[in-house]
Length: 265
Ligand code: LIP
Image 1 (cartoon, protein in one colour):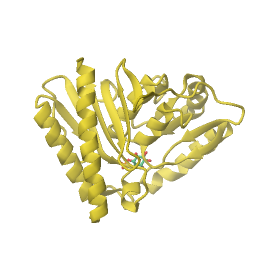
Image 2 (tube, helix red, strand yellow):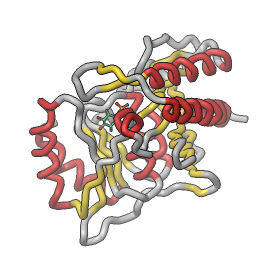
Image 3 (cartoon, helix red, strand yellow):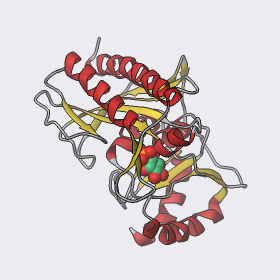
Image 4 (cartoon, protein in one colour):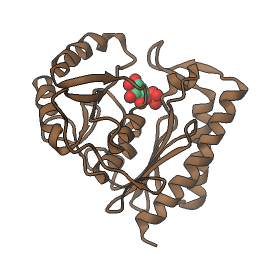
């Protein structure tokens, strides 16, 4: 078995167990705290699930690094770092909206999205039971179905997913950005979980996704899904996906969307 296939198997097994733990905790009732601003919440389950994922990865591959949303980073001694969002779509999870996911990616290189290369990744929605998975060169899959981004966008425009940051100070520029994009959109979807947005682009359920202000753990696995599904991903002009911007689309639509997002980047 190749390294990528081995890492993918580990990621899928742990994501499924972690998602089932998160779903169990949701049924039992949540303890919620706030992080950066009032709307930026974290649940005890976020922290418990990340601790579970971290312990399982440590047991399987003790030399690997760790870079997660809710705990301190660990430098890699093997050249592989795990990038983990234990519950992406935390607000949906807290409200009981069935659109949240466990996102786990294995990357080669330092824990820097500007330079790392994703090798394997999964996005698991425990409510739908959908395990989106990809390995570098191995394609993107949902069960036995090989995923592919939409090949072209018709005259009605693209179905485009995006998101809003937790900080109210970011909302005005976000709405201005949305106004620039609407002329090429048939409609907008705001699912509330970047990893599921990216998985939807990979599966051809959305034509594109863009968002400013996300974290590496939100998009590390989803970006690999889109690339392995034949999509194009990027960020600031000529840059990689990152906090400045994440853009993902089929190759025939990416340029039109990126051009409308560039003025501020
Ligand atoms: C969320 C992202 C989403 C974004 C939210 C939030 P979290 O991540 O997945 O795309 O719009 O503001 O950042 O906080 O649920 O892990």
